[in-house]
Length: 370
Image 1 (cartoon, rainbow, N blue to C red):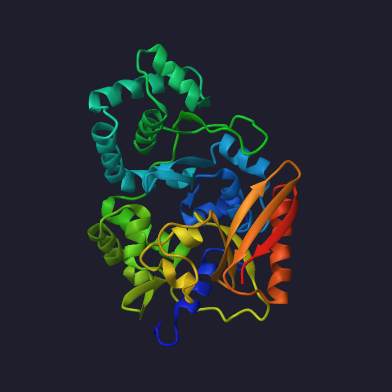
Image 2 (image 1 turned 90 degrees about the horizontal axis):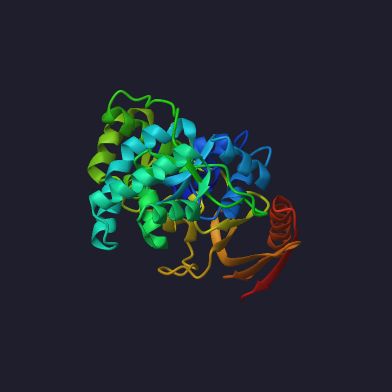
């Protein structure tokens, strides 16, 4: 399509639809993860809401625990060297495509910054794999104890990075969470019986990555994808050379934005749409080059983020949010960057109640700002 008349706000509304946040929900949480391909997941409670708000049937935290326990969803280090949820159908080919480069970065970190050379990492990995072969679903602390018993004393950072290095080598992934009253404590198990890579070669896999990312995140730029997948621009452009015939694009603000064929920006909603979104949600963290389209008015501070949550009104950042969860109440402390209308405040209260119901807690909202 032509980029004429497409501005930052239109792109932001368009992404809201692509990312399943404007009511175009996936049938369920696993389908939402497959649509997005990977969902950043440092905090599983927050990730649970991200999936619940994208699923036509919602998602209770106990259901997310079940999806992790049966292995349909795997929480692992993939793409950028951070936690993501990935559907088991996509894990092998995605890690085989993006893992080697990130794993090399992690290996350099282990040797340069953490004092563990390749031989030490291999010895520690062997102990971890042997421990999990004896009994799966071990916590990080339990694996650390097994390493100590074998003569390898690793502090918290070294242990975490050694495990991440093994995850990116398709050796281990998440197991059944250990109950703790929420989404549970992360455990690990060996990765076994994953579906084979469906792609004939690397070029085919790069083309599939481009299609999946654009269909789940578009409109987006090639630099957005390079950041998201920790790939070189050369690799991303190889993928676009394969996938371009299946996509459409337009020019805006000196960039080429790619999107699904036949699509155009949705109109503005007649009533305000208010969302409480975690800072690491794919809606925000799934981009870098064109991330600022969600802040057309320049209200959100650039640089170090002031909070872990965002108030989003009609696809634009309108404030920062701090969430506090207690046994029976969840409180959302909202610092709005501009005055909220009465209709926006009602929509905010409704969103908070839905979030509270997801957590099985009463929701309270406090406001501060101009």
